[in-house]
Image 1: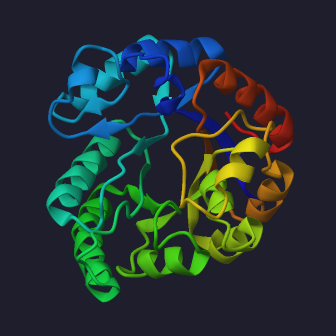
Image 2: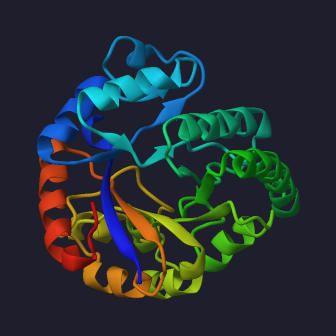
Length: 281
């Protein structure tokens, strides 16, 4: 039977213009024990001046560990979102993220297919993604890190489309990061039916709730959204999500994806109550 852990995607502090360390400190003060950092290659201006939480992979990964240790946190997973149809960007970013994950003893790197270029046919797009995933899967296997693809783009807005990408490079190290909010907003299928279809490949979950207002204005018009509302305050049936995942014989992180600090606090309280005895430290 599945056991669940709660982690916090660092997007919770983006609107507050916080640095990585400031966000980590707040996450710990809220009661979180795990975080999901966002990482990037190169040197990003807002991060360098401590107005943004993303962490440069040009830095020493042990620097991130020092920061987390200072605040009593562990890294559950990495937000390494990379354009799978743009291998010149995705291959170095994903492979570096996998190395970071190994160094931080985090078992998951999350991504999606991101934006499809207008000039690329569907067949060309999938062959390009096959190349990207093949390169990334070799590194993931060496480092024993799972690369998890989530519903967020033009191809992954249905469970079948998501499975097609995951299966482009058959590997035990490529799986699914189910995003509860994105699957609802896409609006092409029942999100719980979709979760049932991909369940055996789910390794990680983005716990993203969608407010009634947000759903009414965008459902069926978008393929995803950066963050949602506090868990338990939107349309997602969390007890049903847990029931669907329950047969899996592994630990699964629920990574809270909300946009505000107070929403992160309420999400933690709600998920602790909802998960009950299924929650492990």
